[in-house]
Image 1 (cartoon, one colour):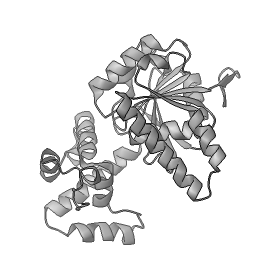
Image 2 (image 1 turned 30 degrees about the vertical axis):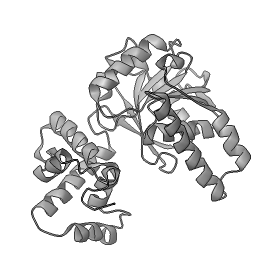
Image 3 (image 1 turned 90 degrees about the vertical axis):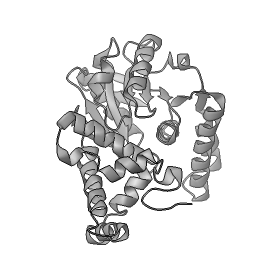
Amino acid sequence: MIACNVETGDTVTIERVGVVGGGLMGSGIAEVSAKAGADVVMMEVNAEVAEKSLGRIDKSLARAVERGKLEEAEKAAILDRLNVTTDLGDMADRQLVVEAVTENEDLKKQIFTSLDEIVADDDAILASNTSSIPITRLAAATNRPDHVVGMHFFSPVPVMALMELVTTVMSDEGVEDRAQAFAEEIGKTVIRAQDRAGFVVNMLLVPYWLAAIRMYEAGIASKEDIDTGMKLGANHPMGPLELADFVGLDVTKFVADVLFDEYKEPLYASPPLLTRMVEAGLLGRKSGRGFYNYT
């Protein structure tokens, strides 16, 4: 995989990619990277979870074979380029490492501090897939803040075409361009965002979700009518409450809290109904029940 540093004109090859976290997002990032030809190491907390993540990728590729989008031999080659590990030290030789763990700022900072010590190449890019946490805070946990950027993919990663590239006041222009070139190489359309909580998409999307929750909470309309209205009236593929369930109500609340902390604007404040649902464990599809019942 070839990327060009437009600042220097040098050709930079990103062949070795690391992904920290093998959940839905991490496994998707690992899959599309390996599919594009990169050697990928994906790290998880233990062997059982790591194998589960690898199995998720295998199933995704199998579906592509069934649909005629991939040959069986291509699937085998992709899996050959993908290795799982439980040792963060295996990221030492990576040229790009994407952190894709849960939205916990302290945990992410710990990972970036460790990666800073582990990744040997001083020119390697350290990226976070965070959907809301300011990248500057994560970069400050390293001694190479100029090589830290946000690479926010969207779920499901193998299907969604967008990647938000989040740049900071410290990030090097050449690093930013290399990260964008890599994302484009793996088939993503890149938009750039300044380092503000929520970036572009979530800064627009989360208030929309919260407004729908407040509307339902106030009894203005049923959840079905709210979702149908936006699907048929605005041509959205999913209604706001359906989409919040799909993303996860815990994630929705977390991002809302981050945005409210950053901007102090009431439109970002979590409605009481959302807070109570999360406290009750009603997290949407992942728990079997949210605004809708999935059991």
